[in-house]
Length: 495
Image (cartoon, one colour):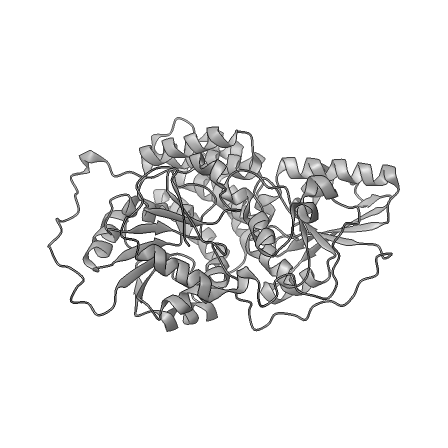
């Protein structure tokens, strides 16, 4: 019976995490790993829990190092290393893209020796189907980025196609109901492995399928690598970088998110949406905009990203900027780290130490605060109180950037090469802001800049990031394209 105890620990940790008790889950997993030091699933679960909770990449690297040489952990260790580089840096953009391609070729492409092939096409055409069927597959049909960035265009798209939704997660909320309301069919496929999922998609007579999960669900990538649908596209959701596969006929993006000079970093052909690759739909509980702010008041500056994005290079930059601000004797400034996970004592100590604060969080001219928000409403209300946001790098904010712009709060951004390093940059440029107004290198972290909160949204109703119809029309043109893309690195704009 003793061999079942580690499995019990896994189930308990997962249950605690689902009930928002991540700290307790991590503590229990650490104890189980101590008791069963050679149990690979326990160590992998601990590594993923640490990432979800606070992004202590040093601990993740130690766990991964302890798993080297274990064949059953080879793929996970490789992926942990790639995730570490994506969030923390350490490799050139070209080298990382090559590493991702290698990972995908080795672990995502179907093995020729597995004895499985998709059934031959039966010859059935879609002529008899009144409306073409578009599959959407994701573990994120909840109140999150896929909803807020895609639902506006999807509602419009539902007028032109039958949307067949494949859900990869049992969790549901109010946003799930919105997705269900536009679905011609809804299928829960969380229990299907990649072979079963490929069979399901193949038999559904889909005109095209759009993946909204990406690196968050490698089983889907393995299924799509089998080419079960004639047209396959990647859009939002786990879209931090190329998938490294050749399974997709297009990677839906825009000129700021994935500029043409970086197209060689993608195995997928890039397909540009002229008004931007997403639009923003705000929730009903969006707070009121903040009023005018005096330029002579001490600024309140925020870091709003998930702690997993608060990288060592970013913290080193903040320390440098704090020292420079002190030397220049600028206005007193409040630096707030805001989010659901910033109530953790260990995380607060790690950040404070990295940016040079002592135990009393006291540095002349700079006050450090941690604000642990409870729920999305509190998160949005916390954004309104900021004068600007210092965006993380090399992995930038995504949905949070759009929320800040909608609430009139600008961001200061260091844009990198991969799309995960350009989310906030793309959102800001499509909000009409220039490089001079957003570049962190030009503005610095704490010096008053050309933009302060003026009580006006930076995403007005006529912003491209609000134009759901235009994005939907661009998607219709893409889906009806008579020539699916085939050339790696090819960039095809929609006119």
